[in-house]
Image (tube, rainbow, N blue to C red):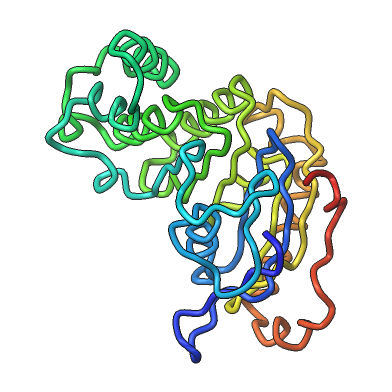
Length: 268
């Protein structure tokens, strides 16, 4: 994103001069105070909503419409799946222009990746919340995207399911070498899953800092979160977000200073 701004009206600015970069294959997380504009930013990135100014570049190109090589997993799985279609047909929905044999093979591989092969012929209303979100994830990866966007995908599931989904998503993204952008309110989740974390200010949102997360992979829910470096990074990100939530006026006072980019030139 290069100098992206967005407002819903002259009196409701949401994004202001947002700039950050994501390297190919990088897992990037975005955090910030509640209501700061993270989902609006994600809509601009996905070309579901045009920015008022600035550019969203994917491999150097601007997309006026959602490109076919991009997939999104939404927070509300109840509304993102088609209740009249089986799990198998939900996953296959985005596959167009491929043969029947190839479609069946790709759907089967996607269902295997999210451990839903046994539920392929069930309907969304027959699944638990976690299984529905796994179905939504399978539908996103079956098209072999280059960029996967995750809009708080674990917010509506229980704590144990959230942990399982975190591990599953990290494994899938690493195996598929996916560029992944996660929007989340959970700071632990952001630091645990990501290669870098972008911290946004209060509305109108600006980039406060982009922080590299140099924790070894594969990551473990216990040992990684006990690592002193994880604790240090978590404390740093939490402090930034907390400061924005408690002292939103600082965002206006410090606009001229721009973001503090920790190793931001890592990729393009």
